[in-house]
Length: 186
Image 1: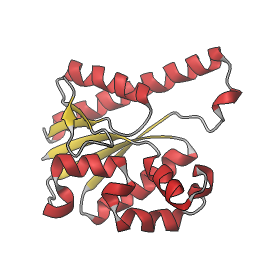
Image 2 (image 1 turned 120 degrees about the vertical axis):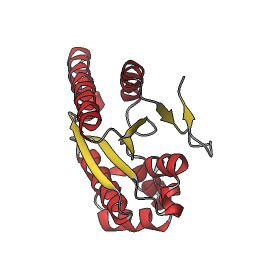
Image 3 (image 1 turned 30 degrees about the vertical axis):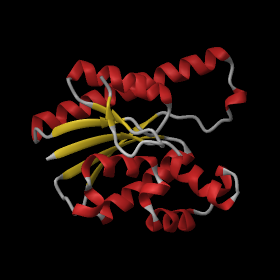
C-alpha cells in the first residue's frame, strides 16, 4: 500500500477562474462548474491531481493500492477544493483521509505583523504535529509506504513538511507546473 499525504492549495479554483476570466472568489460560488472543469481534464485542472498521477499513475492504471490524505486549511477555499478533490479521488476508488489545519478567511492586508506571525506559527505547528501523529498511526496500523506531496498549498507548509519528512525518513516530492515529472526533494 502506498500512502500519499498532499498539501492542498487553490490551483483548482485559480485554474478555473483563469479559464473563465473571473476572480477566485467568484469561482468558489460556481462549485458545480468547477467540479465539471475538474472532471474534464483533472491533471490540467489541479496541481495536486497532476502531481499525484505523475507519481502513481492512478488515473490510467486504475490502481487501488493508493491511499491519500489531504491537508487542507479551515478556510472557505480550502474546504471547497478539498471536497472537490476528495470526491474525485473517491470516484477513482482511492481511500481519502483528511487533516484540517487552521487557516484565515481574512484578506492579508487586514493583519498586523504580530498577528500574522502568531497565526502562522500556530497553524504551521498544528499542521506539523497533526501530520506527524497521522504518519505514526499509519505506520502502526498498516505500515504503508508513505510519501509527502508538497506541490499544492502555502509555501511555508512545504518548508515545515520537508523538515518533518527528513526527520521521519519520509520522501517529500514536488512537481513544478512546467515539469512533466515529480522530483524528490534531497
